[in-house]
Image (cartoon, rainbow, N blue to C red):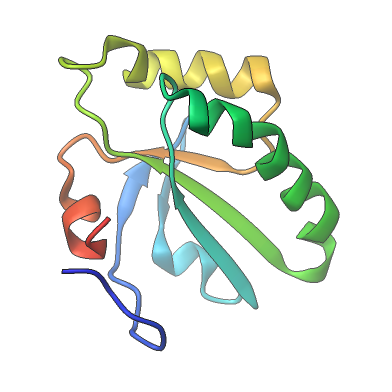
Length: 112
């Protein structure tokens, strides 16, 4: 199942690389929210990280928020563990919330 346009977004409450938990309710007053599935190991994702930082930088003062969620299994992809996510967020200067969906429940709820 994939959610469609005009569907209410499924809720989530996930740990972020900034040390805080973030829920969908945290973004309730945001005019434009982009939820992106991301990870550390994928070269396609890596190619877009700079663009994601730039989108947040360019449009953040207009109410845009980008949230990246990693739902990968760290046993299968050790470089996608929460600890590695924290390192990558710092190294790459992420200016957006990078969240860890360890149970993959948000992945399933969104049909990603």
